Structure formats: structure tokens, C-alpha cells
Length: 258
Image 1 (cartoon, helix red, strand yellow):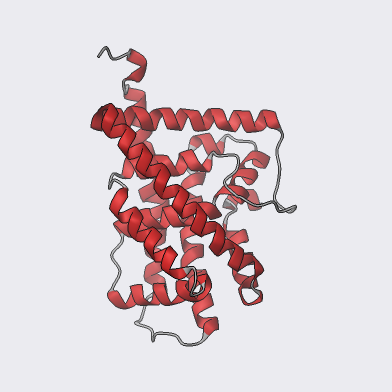
Image 2 (image 1 turned 90 degrees about the vertical axis):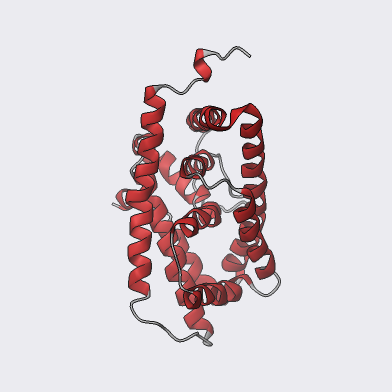
């Protein structure tokens, strides 16, 4: 088949891809590892107290969120957004991406078995006994289906971040933007989708690119379902109200808090 010039990756595309990978490692991964290391300065006892589990889950998830927002704040296309548009995307789309970003971080970070036990016990308490098995199965399915290529996962995170929006429920306190600004955001999303498609086609051919895209969509839709269910628990359970507030604070990029 004839390959169009527009379908090829050019030098500027490779530079863009390299910058995204480097930004994630510098701003998200590095911060996440350091904060997680600080959390585990000494080996802790497995908690029985629900409040300890909640506080631990809060610390680890806020670490995920703030590390991710640090990465986002380093991306030029996000820096140049109007503050109101950036706030719209952050408040609507970062919490639904907790699980996907956690998947990427866990591919890159080693945890001791006792640390994983701590993670699971706290997550089980927050999810509840009904949702936790699906939470575990969703993470396991992601490990089976998602390609271990940092370019792909990090680009996919950006594609999803520029959605309008990912939240599947109405909440009057969440910000809104008009249709024209949504269209502008979708144009940015289209740029990242095109870049991802060109990269996948270059590396895996059209058939491989289609398969990987299907897996990305399938895994994220499954993550979205469990994330919405868990977020409902967090929003509606009285014992998790402080957790909900902590998550809402953590999704704002630091510079937008000033």
C-alpha cells in the first residue's frame, strides 16, 4: 500500500514523543517514587483500624494524583490552555484516570509484598467487599492486555485527559465551559490521537495498531466502570468524606491554586 506523507512520523513528532516520555519520568514517576519511599520509611504493621486504612489510601492516591498533575503541568499544550479550561479538564478528568495512571506507575515501581498487602487492604476497605474483586480483576486485565510501551500509555493518558468530560455523573459544583471551547479541546485531543496512531502504525503496522487501540479502549472502559463505582462510594459514604475532599484538592495543578 502507498503510505501518505501525512501518515509518517516526522522529526517533530519524535521530539514530541520523547518530550512526553521524559516529562512523565521527570515529573510524575520521580515524584511518585520519592513520596512513596517517604511513606515507607519504616516497615509498618498491617492496620486493623479503618481510619488508618483510609488515611493510608488517601496518602497513596493523593501521591498518584499530585504526581500526575505535576506531569500534566509540564506539557506545553496544557500550560497554554486558559486557566478555566485547564480547571475544567482537571476537575472532570483526573479522578477517572487514577487507575490508568496507577497501572503505568506500578509497571515501573517495585513494591515489597508487605507494601502490596497494605495497598490492597486499604483499597478493599475503600472499595467495599462487593467492588474490590472487580477492582483487582480490572487491574489484572490491564496487565494482560496493555502493551508495555511507555509512549503508548502516556500518550493515551493525554488523549483521555483532553476528553470533554470523562465524569459520568452530574455535579453542580463541577465547572463548565461552552461548546466552542469544548471543540477547541477536542481538536487538541485529535492531535494526540493522530500522533498515537502514527506511532503505533510505525511500530506495529495497521493491524497491530488496531489491535492495540482496541485493547486501550477496552481496558479504559472497564477502568471507567469500576472507577465510577468506587468514586460513588467515596462521594456518598460518611466515613470517606475527608478522602473525597482530599482527592478534589489534589486534582488541581499547583499554579492554578494561586
